[in-house]
Length: 376
Image 1: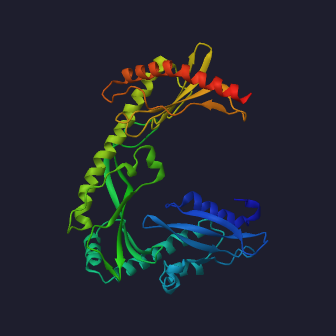
Image 2: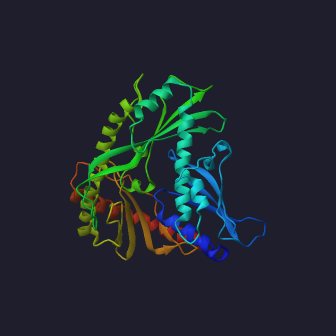
Image 3: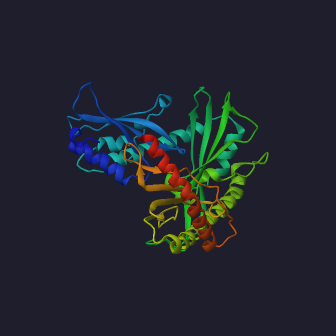
């Protein structure tokens, strides 16, 4: 963001929102209100709703800091009228009391408007005249953090969406610098449930199910690798969730336990390669080592999967002596065709990788020399 083109007071509001929002709000397309304008005073805001994002346009008057912003909602939300609510904590009350001198004013306005939007979407879902949807709402009414909405697909068909938080209790591994207790609750994994509507009615089949987790969690656990339990006929979500949470809890425990196994494996490499040039000391997913064969020196990069040791690491060689015409070091293909067994102990795994590197580096050196010869 070019802060020089943004009013100082607006820049402070946006930065406070970015740094302090309890939700992943995202500011996009910061721009001026007129073609060729020099004051950037409006932007697109991505607001989380039911594990997806809705786009709102936030419009300020860049020439007058005292004027409260306007929020323009999507074309499918024309019936959403948050200003009709005159309660003390409604969006209208925040707009009436707008003060730009408080840097959290914009964030408070967005959060209270999002709360009104979730209420609006819940009323829309409750108005669906379908016994299955009504039954699901009634049975899940006690779930903390439940969100629901109606979305319109590209073919203009509608879907009822539920976002169901899943709470897992797992043992946290020891991480350097971590102050987490030995047992911690995970509540960042959610289940997205979609019931397609046809003429206002759901079908008799199972709903569409998808696990959603923050991108940062992929370093420890990838929800895309989870095989969801089969949806038995004639059950509701409240009956399905316990079996799903049990499956998830076991897989999360295995994934987090894998961190200790990866750390042991990385440490077993040190006697063969020496101390690493770089290493992921937190999740133990990556390590780079220096190796040599005669006068030929090169780097060995290892990427350790979450499923280690069931899935073996990938290896890549990088020459420290051969470069392409743009000055970039030459690298090998990705290797996974070396001897491996998850039943080996860490020293044996490291020994087998060292043996493979010692043999394969000869072919890699020849490949580098051949490439340089063709470049001349």
